[in-house]
Length: 183
Image (cartoon, rainbow, N blue to C red; front, side, top):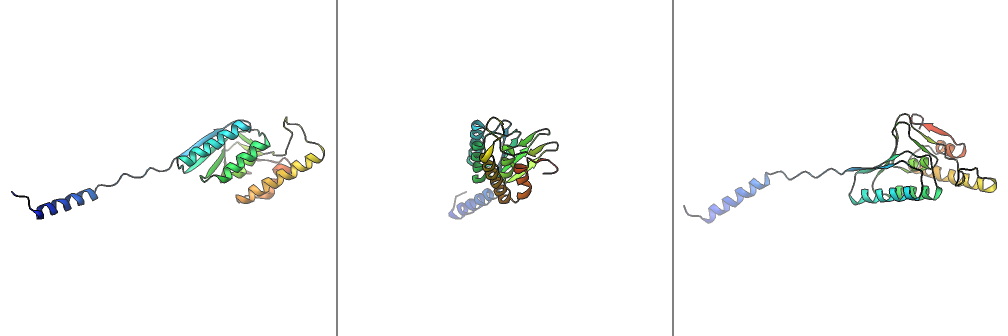
């Protein structure tokens, strides 16, 4: 049997068709990363969140789920964490959980900054009235300034994320707290 140009053409065409019938490997679904944050909000927690957001972006994650349980924390760290959440190209879900967890004070601000805010049954959030660095009451003019600044911040976050700014403000001005069902 001699190999003719016609045979080579048919063979190449057959090989091409056979290869075209082999399915390409399916693209992997983007992962959902998790970042357990169970501490007071302070510079180390801030760095942890910033690094988690960077990892989610680097790996092209579908979302970052922050598993939150905090009594609150420092205003500067809270503001920096809110800014990082708001600037993230990766959707951020803040989930207060598991049951028994809380997102009090500074945690309430993080919950309001998230693209998606979720809470497990038996959790609570709110009670975000500003206090001093050691938990003491702020007095005089500074009390009013801190309260008004925090109230404006929480209203802005709630509005930006499509949540009720009036209820969010109550958590700051009246120290109102909410169960998972109420939130």
